[in-house]
Length: 207
Image (cartoon, rainbow, N blue to C red):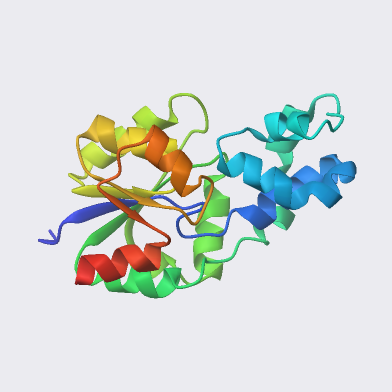
């Protein structure tokens, strides 16, 4: 058994750049949103769902939009757009030298997660990978995973990650590289650390 501490790590927006895939699916379903792609992402970073962001821009929302978005978002052709955020692979290697990293992500397609980790050569960085169901209970399920491995901290980019850490009774290390902005995270979570990226978290941890 490893004597290293366990750190929980989120995937989308923490390790992977989540914008290209989300944007591609949204624009596939709502082509009229193409000129507003930057504004849509800004609204999402401030807490809006994709539907609410489209509504704020007075864009017509197709019938069955939510169901179709969820159906497409983890299809292989869109998962192929996923890439590691700048500095994330080096950060994972640095952190994994001093801690056991437990990847915890809310996804529909567990195979897609493992395929992406293998494609980007990130799988050796993690001692454990947990894929929990997407939905209103994902924060609790993530917290259960954190407690089960005795994690000492959890690093993520959203309010769900913040709630997961709080429910598990451990520090939340927030990054602003993903789904939520610094302003949103400070308003809706209580981060013990707040950094622009996983790379910055790793540097602070090493200091």
